[in-house]
Length: 339
Image 1 (cartoon, rainbow, N blue to C red):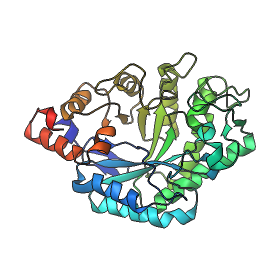
Image 2 (image 1 turned 90 degrees about the horizontal axis):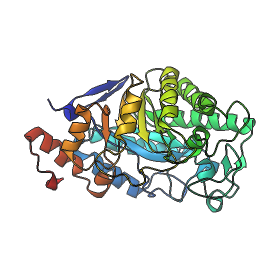
Image 3 (image 1 turned 60 degrees about the vertical axis):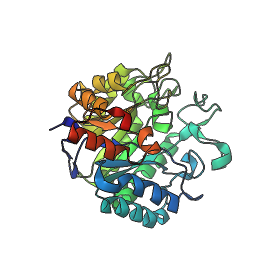
Image 4 (image 1 turned 180 degrees about the vertical axis):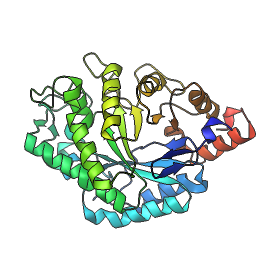
């Protein structure tokens, strides 16, 4: 059997193959963050046929102060749960598993959208967004940890199969991780173990909320690809601590470089990072980054670069990409021009 077609059990979550759709912001939610008809149509189309084993729903804000953009999904209030239940049900009826990604934008939030000065670990400019946030107090950090807890409860109550914590692409948890934005002098700043203290508190809080058998994923901005920023070596240490804390899957992406690497392209361009992380943990690792060919995905698995393959932009552009990819693997068709 092709590696891409092999199943994978992650606690209560059984994945039918190794092909997943990673979270991608669609900006299709209602103005108040509720699931819209457009959101339902978007995920209905991409889950048809169960060719994808898993869809990770785009990042949803846990607090109004952590909203990243207009028409972003919300997981910040119990009032959003009913429509989220409908979304999970539709995807499940199409035969696909689904997980929600929860997030706080921190200093990446827009003052015009949230109506107040954005918050961050330190009062230093956000490298991607500019602007100087207000430094979070320890009391405010505790409130954010509780907000992650409450959001994870809503995810589980809405019927999703797991929850993913967003710590990539320059958002709040990534800001604590990165030396570019974390200049704190307390136990949330300094060495890498201090810089992930908030992550560990969030993981502990979420595990208390969802129980032992509910999968927790963490999207890790494993390198900023910038002088003075987070390094792969930092993230290897962080990954080991996250595994000890109870994270079940690591979803690897970029830090302040976003979901791409400056000047680097090709199939699976985050592969060197995912391989480095995979070498130091025993939990599954997800690889994304420019993958557009089924055989490339198969080869990345064969080369031990990751355990799961995330295909984002190709599926966003062509909702039938996963079907074509799986069929090409099943038939041994290597003519990738059809994908």
